[in-house]
Length: 307
Image 1 (cartoon, rainbow, N blue to C red):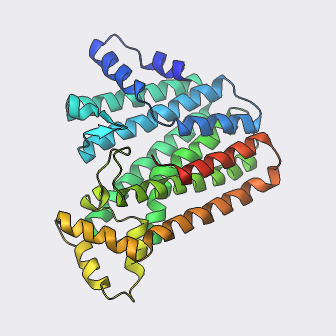
Image 2 (spheres, rainbow, N blue to C red):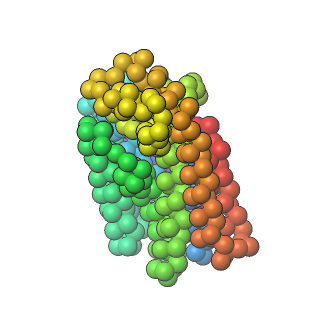
């Protein structure tokens, strides 16, 4: 699959080749291709369609990360300088677009309209989820259900697409694909909740400053839960800080400590455990089976990871 990505993104542009090659050398966990290929294995086997589909999903994912770095003005990702910090926002946006065209080429290479449709739907959901997050960050009006809806669209849709591609690559029954999509949705939601907890702790390995989400107006599950605790004496004061137009560094620190003290981090972990239990229920009719055990291992990794 990595060879497919490298070949698809090769071009006559020396600048593009240099940037793409450097970017791919610092690739991340490759979790989405892993889910895609596990899904293919679950439904029959890893074939060329599945490999092309996995490559398409990974390129779309990376395109979204490159564009996110521009939006967030990020200087580093995975401990490596971002494209926008080395070159410019202009170049980074164009390189992100180039990754999208690569994904389209791989989608076409599958020769399967269902896979192309799944990729298109995922791209739409991802974009709308990000837009909704910006909207709610602007007016600070977010509750737990709204938060879940946003991360289902902006994160879990990618994981759901992985399950679909693996199924379509093997002409699996739609009912079976829908069941695995449900597992993938739970996994994707859990992945984002875990990602959001990183914002409450400083860790140089993560490469993201503490409180970065709050600086951007993004209120995530630990703080959403803490703010639901109207019984706490500091509730109104903390709510006022969240609604502040430009919070100071001290404001951010106070909100983080409030979320921890009110049990927000514990609640996030309890939610992830509940999602894992629900995901295990989805898989239980298929046990014992090697791929099912591997899916469970991936879910455990998502909850326990430090990066």
